[in-house]
Amino acid sequence: MSWRLRGVDGGIAQELDRLRASFDLSESFPPEVEAEAGAAIDRLELPDLDHTDIPFVTIDPLGATDLDQALFLERAGEGYRVWYAIADVAAFVELGGVLDAEARRRGQTVYAPDGRIPLHPVSISEDAGSLLPGLDRSAYVWTFELDADARLTKTGLARARVRSRAQYDYEGVQWLIDNAGGAGAAANGGADRSLLLLREIGEKRIALERERGGASLRRADTEVLEKDGQYSLELREPYECEAWNAQISLLTGIAAAELMLAGRIGILRTMPPADDESIARFRHQAAGLGTPWPRDVEYGEYLRRLDPANPRHRAITQAAGALFRGAGYTAFDGETPEHSIQAAIAAPYAHATAPLRRLVDRFVLLVCDALANGHPVDPAVREALPTLPGLMASSDGRVNQFEASAINIIEAAVLAPRIGEVFDATVIALRRGGGTVQLADPAVTAVCEGELENGSSIRVKLVEASVAEGRVTFIPAE
Image 1 (cartoon, helix red, strand yellow):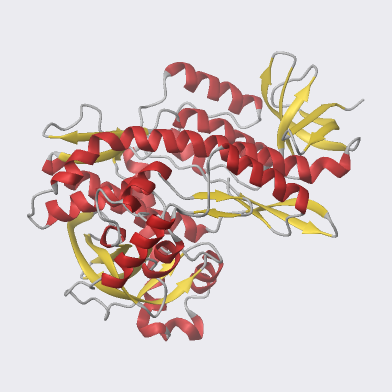
Image 2 (cartoon, rainbow, N blue to C red; image 1 turned 90 degrees about the horizontal axis):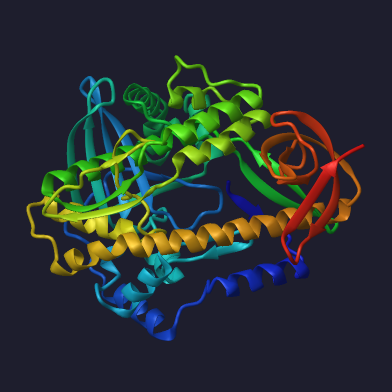
């Protein structure tokens, strides 16, 4: 679930500032890190290989400025060719330097309700390293040859200079595809026209995901809105194009994993399959929420049938997260790992498409670039690989705790003026003395005390909403 807060008042801003400080999350960087970033920007030389003739475009949430990926899609015979440019963060980060050390300490960009806490200085992440439109940038350019079923047949990777033609948000891409391009299809040197293939390729890649038993969770985004000092939560249902676009990123991660496994060096994103006890618990929860998981339907297919606009289906999707536990990173050098599969994707997989926002991607790209072009992997990269799983686990844990606490603060702020009101809710989990309920409106999941029946639709009364403590409590309404 992602959050965006508009119109933060002083009290909430103060609590979020306090929360950031408690997790040692700072938007600013030490002077020596900023200085090293500035020097790297000044001395940057763009690659000799010139792909600025390819009309790349970016697709990101509205207002994004840290643009990691740009794509261009075209037909190639009976199949397709995918050009996928990834920001060349390694061009700015000297291995062993102070910027590298700071990035390893941070691990990833944190998206707080009231702003970003970046992995790299904004001079890189939102300027010199970002694939902003109309500007020449250094990038790792993947080329994928796909057959008529969008199955990968050939992979290439090279550093090149690129120039994005346009920056799209998801709404704009969905409109373009739904309207078959309209009058704007010829704009941006054919870039718009290329996006019309996104549905075709994306749906075929989803079919391949279904074939291999993969699964994805479709979750609605939640926005926090402010009007006249009152806060409200609104759900934004995902656009279809978001799933199609995600398939291009998944394709890249799978190709990167295959390349590293063949080269016997790298770092994978791995996840074990869910155990029998977790599966049985989820089946019970899904049945209790009114949409049983049929025994003859694959897990991924069942999740695809859920409607994110349905409150009970949203609760099932929330519960399904328990089957996606145990994800981590597995580094290897010389021997391939015994367990190389990411269970949700049902294939070997690596994080390779967000180096501006995630530490590990920079190293995956460095390894893949060396392997794809017959170069030895930098000894400093080899030395770093075994440290990355621990660094990312530490960062993930810190960020997950921060985000959960931030969500609790926002939910409490939204509900604070409504103490004593009664809401429609669905019970989505039980615990001793109560359970968890999902409100129909606003989009809040919270603790409810008292006797509850899992999956039941009930009326609940708000009895507590503490912004300072990030706590919300309901009881069954009489």
